[in-house]
Image 1 (cartoon, rainbow over the protein chains, first blue to last red):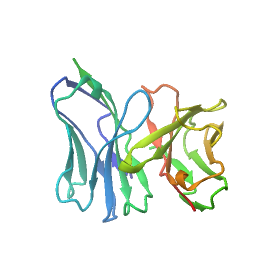
Image 2: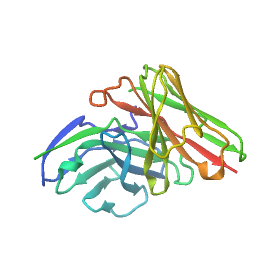
Image 3: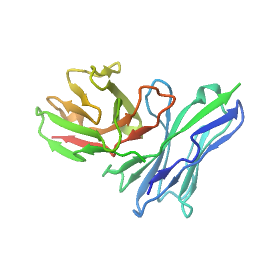
Length: 117
Length: 118
């Protein structure tokens, strides 16, 4: 079974509008972390936001917020006020186990976001 | 979905020794493989891109003599950290893609290798 599922291979959004990128995960480990990365055409992986499994509140970082629904095992990324520079590939990832252990890093297949002017 | 494995998952070595990390695509042929290094604050830095049968393309600031990358077959790429030092301690992740076309092919990531240099 897939550990990380991103059901949207491609998404389009109008500039200045908000967009939600879906991510669902599967783990039996009570301690895990969820990440979102942005990958522009250059290939680098830019860290956007992190949510720990024990965090009580949804993570926010500027225009990025993570809609963490633990019971549903979903960790959707919300980008508010989309900009043309947001056009990129977005990967959802999960680290199973405590942070200092660092193993079992799993990535989803990614969602390609295109922001339209 | 496609599977990419890395070996070893964790390695501890003494300063000055060399360490080899393997990245394998288990059920597809990977024309292109990427190596990343995870830094504090969770960012992943692209170290190099390798295409099967040709020399790796290193990102600016990455020492190619320090981080030797070999992509000898369509299912295996290796990263060798030569004369490792404590500052090389990090989490290294590889990924693989079936083609060189970044717009049409999914990139699959390995589980990562944690390197600790004493």
